[in-house]
Image (cartoon, rainbow, N blue to C red):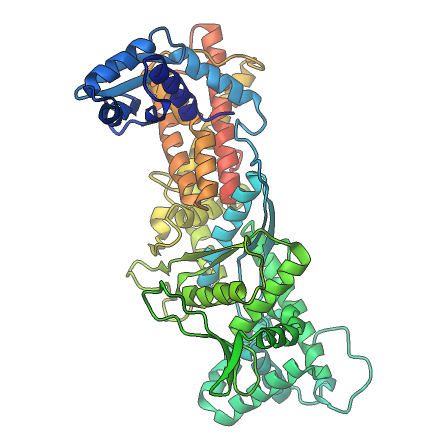
Length: 588
Ligand code: ARG
């Protein structure tokens, strides 16, 4: 369906032309003075220059040409030449009637579907998920859903961090604890056991203690580096251990992400792309892009227009070891080979921006991608505690994700129990669903690049701009619809009629914005625009609800129309929260 604003603009275009002026002056915007009018067109002022005529006269001519318009109910010319517009009641309800018949609520799939890879999540194997990973997961998942809904082919890749020193640390710590394991015997040539020599909780304890020890014990750290090197060189026993670490870790990660309603299409990691590195680096050197500098292999990526220093991109250290950058470049090679993406989007902490500037430039310069492959870095800000500092535990450590989520759940459970009497199990189920909305909405309602304060109290409140408020609104609609049904009501196929009061009109106008909000949110990869929209929509609905007795509507056709309006509101809200990555319970 065409966007409402475009339809109004088209109507204005023909009016400008009918009045003898160019259609290009007819641009219409939402009014910035909603108290005075709904839409406005300021084109007469610009046209005045071309036609050497007073803007007021031009506007007057256009207004005349609009007489009898089905689309506009009121056209007002205001000094010096503003044209203020009000949409007609019949046209607005007609628009919503079409919308309610469309499965996608009038938002059309893109005519140019792209293949997009979204790199998000980025957890590090064997290290527990912490709050820093939360934002990537939440934002990335929403971007994936939004772009997919727009009709693109979207592949979400978790891009595991499974290739660093942490692997060597785990290996030597394990060797200290269980030296007789066959993985450590370099002579061993037989089969390795299928079962991992540790559980996930052991693994999660092994890494932090190894990491702590490596900071104090030089020899220990040396050993870990050596083990990492041998692993990367392909030492058999270590490779087998890596497989176990991955298996145990990934099973646990999948569970964690499932609790967050986050799902990846690919579970690839840094280790998967190591085989691409030698040929890639060789080619970069052969083509003359990569050269030796102080023993290291680097590619220059400075550009003339740079206003700040962009250091060369390092491919190999002087000892021949590859780096985070090298792995990301090799990942691009693999992605191009296997999936031919038109676009790669990275949802990563904005502090890594320079790394990605280097990777993208280097990939482009060395021809790893085609000219029209797009890269987008979606850097997000830090999640802070109430003190404005990065979120920490009470003891000052890194906050583990599961603790943070259980804090929210607990608070939610308390609030749910206070709201009405219900069984323990029901309360727990609802708290889980609503708690997730609190976390996700609390995050997504901020522009991703900004830092924000994680405020359990505010996020879990059912009032204000929060996830629970949106869910309350949906549940309220569901319960009215249920009551209507219980009273024997039936509004299938009924039309939405012209509004009868201002709050009904305001709700209708919000609903009609749906496709334009979706388009904009997708173009800008901006879930916060969807949040802002559903907050406005929920407010408009609640105002309407408080001012109008929906089930008490006397006239039968009007009552049905209002029921249809409720159904449409529920559908729009549900689609939107689905794109944000959470859902609504039946009751609250
Ligand atoms: N594992 C990394 C970290 O925890 C994030 C990975 C981001 N993605 C990427 N392609 N480099 O910081």
